[in-house]
Length: 155
Image (cartoon, rainbow, N blue to C red; front, side):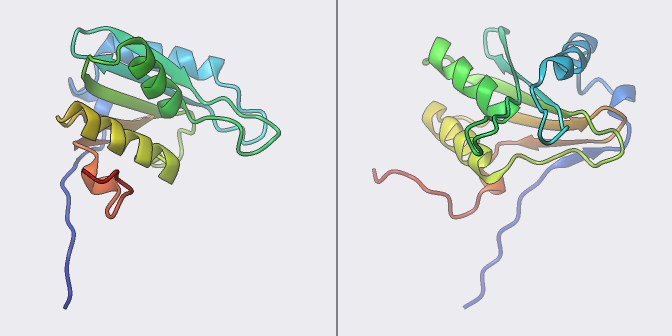
């Protein structure tokens, strides 16, 4: 028996010409790229989590010579948001990569698992927006499709 999994997302060829990302968030994401600690990969990433209250929690990738002891930007932001505001739902997660010539980077497997479980815990989907410094963006409503056959606790 064959099965098929599909999910929906939006693409933006020039997100800077749309209202998908506010000027405030754009400027903050770009500024945060300078605080990423990426001496090994030379691949800075910034992230902003927007809670339902409008509060923003930030994160950048933090690398460490003892791989894999570092953390990705989105995990830093999401985990900090849930530690500080465990009962408040996440509305949007933005992830910006510093590489302008690449497509927007998708979260790694570990980050997908954290995003997936966070969304399950809050019982409502959040928006995930992936952008690079130039023009391209991908927008997902809900992250469940990014990690088919994920690990979950038994109910």
